[in-house]
Image (cartoon, rainbow, N blue to C red; front, side, top):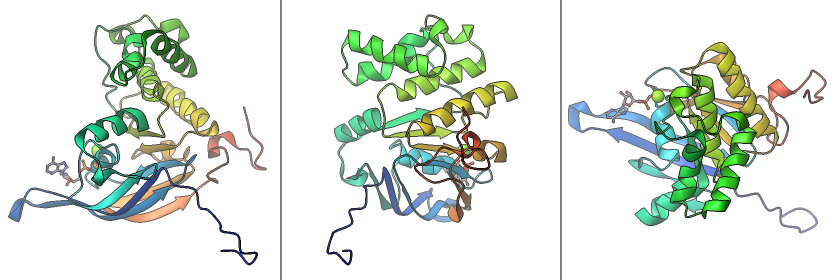
Amino acid sequence: MTAAGLRVVEPVPVLRVQSLVKEYGEGDARVRALRGISLDVQRGDYVAIMGASGSGKSTLMNILGCLDVPTSGSYLIDGADVGLLNEHQLAILRNRRVGFVFQSFNLIPRMSALANVELPLVYGGVGQAERRERALAALEQVGLTDRVHHEPNQLSGGQQQRVAVARALANEPALLLADEPTGNLDTASTNDVLEIMDRLSASGRTIVIITHEDDVAAHAKRVIRLVDGQIVEDRRQAPVDGPPPRLRENDGAVVQ
Ligand code: ADP
Ligand code: MG
């Protein structure tokens, strides 16, 4: 309550993670991949999760994306406690609330870019005409309007990853999760994909990107560093509701 007696309503974070622990295996073979991770991600934030190989980045991302379950701890997506959902509700959450981008693109071969982007909408039960319209709009957002009928093997790595970003966006997810999305790309394609992420962030998207490259993390508004399954650093580089650092000048003016 404020002095005037008004209640200050905190916005519901897109992600609320509390004391997340993940262990693999048992006995002597037991690996503690996450050792008590807690963090909130507000709508519009752009977070880079960094850490050496084996520090738990992919484990965290798989749990946040509802592809795996934690050993203990809780997490909420858009206010919904994921641990309380049944399989059916989880599938819906995964499809509607989270968009994934993987290092290896994971496009379906011998299907056009357009059909790949439409796929999550097929699973989401969106009708054909609307599906087409939304997929074309998503492909336009990543600058691939002239490649919609190409199949993955007719596209460069950078173009394939842009199709994957369009697919992740097709359902208008609350959260875009990307695990090393530029790990397989050359410098020019890396810059293309990062520029798209910057623009998505500037338009209000919530993004969590996993990377071990400082150059990639420099684009994010906030950098979280993991060591041995624990957060050792949580540093803000730009305000949640401002543009990402690469779209700023020294005086804060936006460079377009
Ligand atoms: P990162 O993505 O940061 O490289 P991971 O999340 O893949 O790290 O792995 C964290 C730790 O958990 C590592 O020690 C890894 O060997 C272990 N690990 C990951 N997945 C499994 C699994 N399915 N079974 C057993 N151990 C695993
Ligand atoms: Mg990994």
